[in-house]
Image (cartoon, helix red, strand yellow):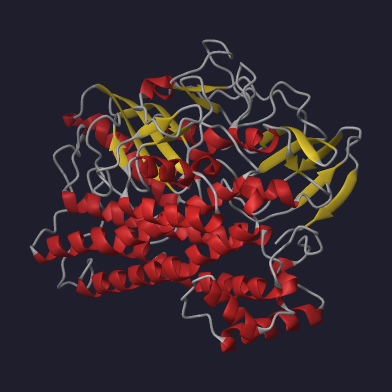
Length: 582
């Protein structure tokens, strides 16, 4: 067959603007380009500003994982100026980060990724009693698994279908031949989709208690902006602490009794996806979820969780050896991006010397086909020691598994036995989806069983200190200083790098997880991880270009996140089909 060109623009159910261009032959993807089509330039916006204010700006990099950028920023600034937040302040940050981790993973699985696997229309024909039996058979003990609840959801679905409108599920690919779950499994999953909406309303309240609001909670260089006093109504008091404990227990119940069994069951039906979507076979992580390093990850993490798991990189598919991370080996390339470097565009720059100088050379939108251009994206291409690497839950789970972290090992080995897969198959669409569920359980259990008890015990002991004032005033800072933070957030390793001169930001760079993953080709022609996952072995399926369900499954497994529209074009730029996806 002749090579076909397919454009998915914008790719839906992600955060931000992502365009994927593909070449296919005989229903296989043979080439791929990952194209970020929105420029924001927040790093340039914060240049020249007071370092103590930067967290509020960079928190707007993302509308989903807002607090993570703010924590990375205050930690990088603290590294530069020598501020040391009190233990209770760091515990609060860790609690907020753990709640964000669980929130992000649940929202991703049920509201952003599940529709790639779950046929909503099919659920309307299910038998509610058989749906309960299916839930029981997969080991789900979730309290929402009742005949009454499933019948209620089925009736709602049938009412919606009878109306002729599917609301947020309108124009999904419900007639695609590769939806495989039986109707009862689909009904269970749709019911859990709705349960997860209630769950996320509870979990975000943790951020509001400690950060004042959500999204974009408040943080502070030197500590936290909240005050602790169990006896005062205007502070973090005993009532709020009791509420946080209750919400955290809801988190643990939902992810262990509902999310993990669902993920195992669904990916068991789509087990071939553990052999689809393999990307870069090198992985980088500084620890398990929430781990934060102030400066190089060769000392003690400032975060208070999972301290036995050291940072590391897994290189070239060797899942038996963990190598130390050297931050000096991190460089960002722009040979496929719309920027220019003063040292030459084929050179890589370390983030502390990073530049964000716009040099748009692309066509005027709307685009017909970008891949014929050498530059086709706004995303830089980070590399570690010249390698494209995967970051994210799969990197962290492999890191913990390699170091025999007990709970990770228990869950992963159980999944391997249940699914009949090997550790090497975690580098796949299915592996990334499974890893996120595994990590959500360990994060929720850490929040409930470790972080909150230590915070409460310290409060009972009279420790209310959440701010280090000794380095607040700029006169206490060096004339010139630099710092950085590396931390593990929902989508992967996040690092912020800053240079401060005369009390102002001289240079600021954020190397975010999606930059690691969505970046394009480097000067050697090495594909970025998204591109590699789709076209690396030229065997990734794409049966129907008008319903590109298979590439959506793979890209969503990395967890970009926002819902919009899909626009597919043919080689001449004419519309093949326009669909609005759920």
